[in-house]
Image (cartoon, rainbow, N blue to C red; front, side, top):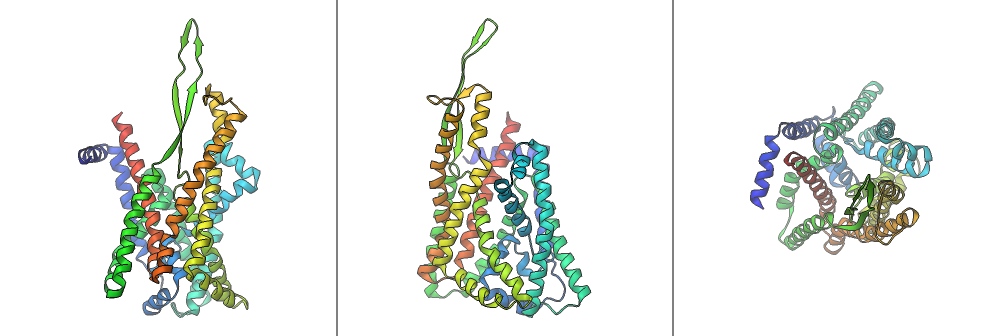
Length: 424
């Protein structure tokens, strides 16, 4: 196995195109980390540390900013606005027929239009988030009170930083390897890892050691389970009808249609977490502008997020629902059945057309359920540990760990695919 890995590594760096893609990815992530270290003006670091220590919501939001929010950097919004815009567009494929037609019917041109709409929606979302965060941080004394000109300049700076990361993520997807937005989140998680480990080591007491050891064992089991389940698939046998070409009769070939157990990958986790954080973000913005009901509602929702059992139950339900939703958006049994019929392929024992569509839909629904439940249980496992032990630092680690493992697996598959393509 080691020899195979070294062989593939040699092939990867021996091929000029793969080497360029790898170096482009590394350079883009290095640029992101450099931007994440540049803070906006007039930040009180002591007040900032105290604010994050007492607010779990912003700790969760810091995942999507890649650690930029914790430093109040010029890219403090991270790729969060772009992810929110993508969620809105995915919902649009179900609500609005024209959006669905553009995404599925028009091929590459339609997907380019879909991405363009996502970019345009990202701009107002980034501006609203920048206004709400800066107003909230001013009220908390984390940054100095700014005049109108300075406030507008900071809003423009933070918004431009988020759009720059969106552009950087798309460049990585096109010229690098893997999904650029997911890799930016992964880079932020890994960059925060040394500080998190040192905090656990120096802040923990002897009574906390069993809890941390239990979480470490749980983390290893989670990694193992995610790796195994991510590769699991249900194979639907496919046969091709015999074809007559001139005087020759060609024998029909047999293959299979692979249906992955985790068809949606890590996307349901990101969607569910974004949806859970959205109300708190809106309430924080309203509270910053002294809206009367916002303060009480924000305190109630913060208490809800701090309760591991209530938060975990909602998180689990959203992960399961978004798994079904994203699978339905990205995998259409009707199209699969139609394409099989056009190419003369069929599922043995099932009639082509509508019956094949219904059969594939039934298989997808059956295997999506255990995949969704597994993903939900993995997502809330740290919340269960927190509810049993009272250790609050583990929830962030669990969500970040799940995202990191899924993104790393996806990156490894894409690198392996590039190498295999050159091998053959």
